[in-house]
Image (cartoon, rainbow, N blue to C red):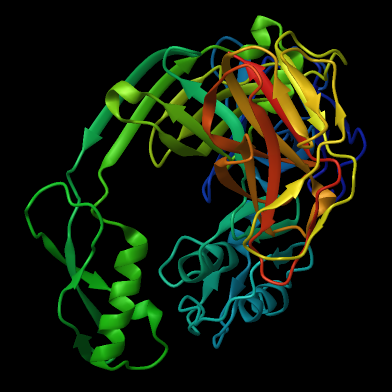
Length: 494
C-alpha cells in the first residue's frame, strides 16, 4: 500500500488523511509477541508531500495480510547527506506510556482494566480494554505507587501480563488481551520436502533446576520457603538453586506455606530447565511454485503456531511465531522469527494475492454441507462429508461419508473449520480418521477469524489405494456445542 499521513489528533483512519506518500522508498513494520510494535520508513526530501511528514503526526500503514491499517506516531528522524530521510515511528498504543495511575486494589483482570480506563491522569478517553479471560488475582503493579498505563499492562513485576498471562493485540485504540492470540496453522517446514537450509544452536547457560522462593515486605520483613523443584526434563545431574523473588504475588504478608505453594506455581510456569534453542531455517515459498490456493492456506500471523520437522536431529515440533517484519509497500512479510529467540525465516511468506479459483494440481477438497451439531464435550463426533471438489487423487465414499484414496502416495492433510461453528475462544479438537479406526490427531485450535485452520499430526501420511479418510470434531469447552456445517478437508500429494 501507499502510506498515509494523518494529523496528530486523528482518531479514525478510514480515509486518505492529509495525503499519500507515494514516493516512499522503504517501509517496514516490526511487531513482537507482547513486545515492540514499530514502523520505520525512508522518504526522499524531493518526494511528493514530504512537507507533510512531521514529528508528532501519524503514518497509517498495513501491518499484516489482513490489509488492516494501523496508526503509528512519527517520533524521530535522521537526515543523512544523500537526501533520503529515515523516520522512526511507534504504534499509537505507546501513548499509554504517558497516562499515569496511582490506584491500588485490583483483584481481578476486570478491576485492573477499569482502573486503566477510568482512573488515570490525564483522563484516558481514547483507549479501550478487553479480554477473553475472566481471571481473578491481585495485580501487584497497582499498589498505590504511580505507574504508567503501559507498564501496568506489561513490563514491570506484578503487571497484568505477569499476573494473568496471555498475548496482547494492539488494534488502533483497542487493547485486547487474548488467552492465546494465534492459532495452529496447517503449515509445515519438513526436511526432504520444502526445507532448504537448517541451523540449530543449543545453549544451557542460565538454566537451573531449583529455587528458594521468598517474599519481602516494605518493612524489610522476609518470608522464605524450602527449595522448590522445577521438575521437567533435566539436561544434567546438577541441582542448581537460585533465589526467586515472588513479593509481587501477595498483597499482604503471606505464610511460609503460601510462599512455597506460589513459588512452585511460578517455577512451573517459568520452566527454567529449558535450554535456549535457536533454529534458523530457509524453505521453499510454495506460492512461487504455482500454488495460489495453497498460498492462502499457509497464511500466518504473529503468535500463530507452525510445524518444523527435521527427524535426523530430533527437532520436530511446533514453534510459535514471536516476531514479524512486514513490508508495507509490497504487502508481504519481510521476515518472521519462531520460538523464544532469533529463529529467522527470511522470505517466509510472499505475495498474498487471492485464489485463482482453480484447484492446483494434486489438491483435493471435501466439504461438509450437512448441519451436525456436537453438544458433548471432549468426545469425537463424526462430521459426514457431503460434497467434494474437483481435485485429484480422491473420490467420494458414500458408505462411510468420507473420501477414498484412488492411488497410493504421501499426502499432506489439513482441515478448515468456519468461524460460526463455535463461540470465539472455544477450544476445538479436529481429527481425521483413517479407515474409521485410527485417528490422526486430534489437533486443537482456538476459534476466531474468518476461517480457523488446524494442522493434523502427522502432517504427512502414507496412503494406499482405497484407504478412506473421515472427519471428526470435538469441543473441549464444557457446555458448548460446535456445528460441523462447512468444514473442509484439504489434501495435497507431496
